[in-house]
Amino acid sequence: MSQSNALAKSKTARDLLEIEWLNVEWCLPRRVDEHPMAWMLFTENGLMLNARQLPRDDQVILFDPGYIPLCPRRSGVHQANARPGG
Image 1: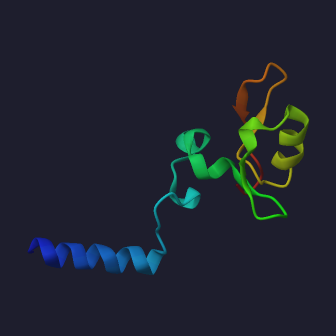
Image 2 (image 1 turned 90 degrees about the vertical axis):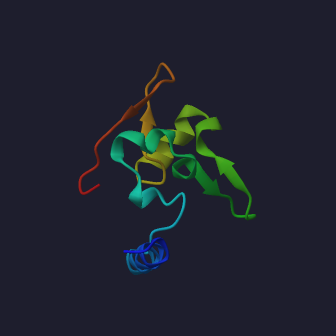
């Protein structure tokens, strides 16, 4: 198989599976805490912010419905918590 044919086939597979750069859905579970887009939120004004910079209480509120992947401990260190179905 030529290189151009292999690239074309991989492009077809990426399009079919809707794989995009920085897509959190395709990130390994053990690496989600390091994934930059897993922590990005959009405000009502359309501004993007990093949820890791929010106070712990706000992070807990965002974790419960699944907006962020990890829930912080009281010490400030993040811990992975398994959510049912996720």
